[in-house]
Structure formats: C-alpha cells, structure tokens
Image (tube, rainbow over all chains, first blue to last red; front, top):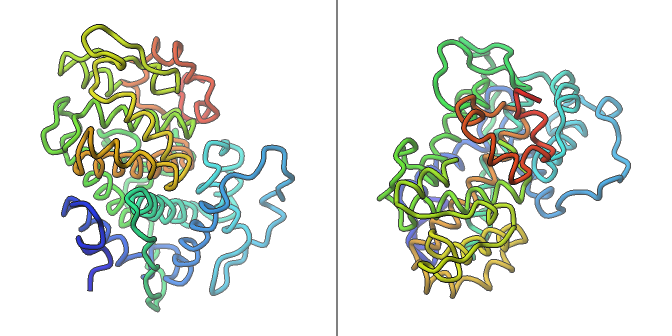
Length: 230
Length: 126
C-alpha cells in the first residue's frame, strides 16, 4: 500500500512528486550507508521534534558538542540529537568551526547521512502540512547493518564535508551530500520532481502550473527567510 | 539570479527587494505588484509558510482563486523543497558556485545578502 496515495491530498499532485516521496519513505527505515534503520528512524523522529520546537533562543546555553555523549547504541547519541536539532531548526547558525567539531566527533559519513535524513524528511512533512494533509507515519524499521563505504572520487574540498571532486561540473548543491550517494540520489530526485523537473537550465518552464519566475520568487523568499546565502 | 534571468526571458520586470521582505514595487503595467504575476500573494504565501501550516491555510482560498489548485501545489512544493535545500547548503558549507558569485555581485550587496550568517561558509571571497 502506498504511503502517499493521490487521494490522500485534496488537490492533484504530480505523479513524479508522489513517486519520489514513496521512494524516500521506503528507504527511511532501512539500513543506510553509515546508520542502521533504527538509527535512521531515530534521526527522522528527532528531526520532527526539532521542527515542532523551532529554533532555541539566541544566547541560550547549549552544551558543547564535545561534552555530549557521542556513543551511538541501538538509537542515536546525545551528540547526534544535538546535530539533528541544529541542522533541522537552526541551520543558519551553523559555522565552519561547529561543523568541523561535529564531523570530527561523528565522522563525515554519519554526519552527511544525518543531514540527508533531515533534508529528505523535512520537505515531505512541510509539503503535506502546507496542503493540509496529516503528517505521514514513519515506516517500520528494517533490521540489518549499514553497508559502509566511501565512494570513489570524493575528497576534502571547499565545503565542510568531503564531496565529489573528480571532474565535477554541476552546481555545488547537487554534490553537497555526495559522500552518501544513495541518499544524495534520492534527494536529487526529490528536488527534480518538486522544482526543476530536469529543466534547470531552461529559463522558461512549461511543466509547472506556475511560471519559472513565480517559482523562483517563492524559492528566493523561502531562502531569504531561512537566511540562506547559497 | 535565476529569478532575474527567468523574468528577463518572459520580458517581466522583477523587484528583487520583494525576496528579502522589502515589499513589492508597483508599476503602471501590472498594478500593485511588479512584472511577476501574483508576486505579492506568492511572497505572502512563502512568508506564511515559514510561520506554519495554520498561517498559510488562511491564504489557500486566495491562492486557489489566483493560481488554481496546480499553482497552489507548485507553491507548496517549491517552499517545501527549498526548506530542504537551505539545510543542505548550510549544513555542508558549500560555496556559492563561481558563475553565480560573479554574476550577483551587485544584487548581493544591494539586498544585504552578504550579511547573512550563512554567507561565511558560502562565499569563497569571504
């Protein structure tokens, strides 16, 4: 049974969007590259809590990352919970020093996959919320171990995280999570279905009800509200 | 940059200050907004969406009347997916692409984008 059937929305939703939602939901509870299915689900749950809570007040005393328990058992550690919270609801406050510390403690694979889990679930939850659809229940956990493995061609570069460097020609945002290719591919499929539909380099779009300038206006205002420079 | 260039492609005049909450500049041809149809409403939708589903629900009827159900779904999809993209960019500290950096010098200065917290990790020139 699909998690996102067309009739669960009041308005017609592009089949490609629903297909990427299904693909994303199917993988959430499965073992990933660096986290187990149970840990991925814990990240998704923590991200939802962080969205509900919103950003913490500026100036609130927050424990240093190094002081947090960073041993991940069956679930996720206090360190991972803190990173989820920052990425989900306070991403504009992330600094190079903070990211370096988090990555140093967690390892780049776990950090990147954690970010991927957040950016795979947040858009779906927001989309459903904006269209008045109840939040989808998270899927069941699938047992198994993370597959591990660093993809060929990744190395440290100008980003906080290692990313594809060999012969890269696309926009940087497309390789941001390339350290974990499986989740990055799912993310890019979602972006394509919800935004450019593989017509990124065309300035006039006909595949949407809104024109490209209307969509770019919404995108720019959303980015500005999040104080995202990129 | 994409807003300006896609507007240019349709011979529409866009007021970029609307993207940072500066309101929209009217003109004789398009009335209250600038050249992007329903600019004011779409900007309000993005802002309400940032406040939460309850706030944006108050605009649903206006959105349906102005851009139809397909437009409403497009707007929700755009806001939703960019909430993922901004988190990807901030969390990974990706630099702004060189061709964008080179072509947005004036806009970034005019709109104050260089003052954003995230600019420290996204600007190769910082």
